Length: 158
Ligand SMILES: [Zn+2]
Ligand SMILES: [Zn+2]
Image 1 (cartoon, rainbow, N blue to C red):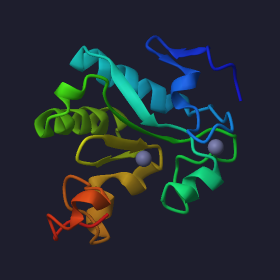
Image 2: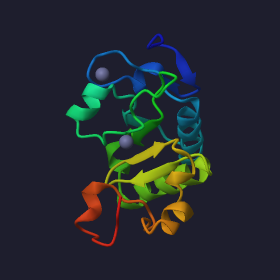
Image 3: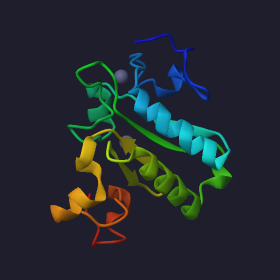
């Protein structure tokens, strides 16, 4: 845990990544912050982290995957974040896809992004999260689509 008021990037403070359960876990992989900073720079408007670090009990409570990268990894840091626009009026489908594409590009081979109706998930899981790898496993339809959209687009898999 670090002080909530610490600026972990030019536009983000530790408190923004704090577990929503109140346990205080707030340390996040620096790469996550870097991706958010780069996306923010491009879109030019404030972003909101809707879910950063999740302790295991909160992760279970909010329905996260059992192996979710939101949970602190061996070094005590969360390796994932869900984010969207701070301004609700900007959360149009096209704008959310812009966030997804910008984040995917910035993640390179180090992680992956998942598209949800009104937010984007990013994590640092390595090549496993990338389109080509998942495609070779028969698992990938671009873009990676979150569970909330699966019923609308049955060909997608998460
Ligand atoms: Zn917690
Ligand atoms: Zn997430």
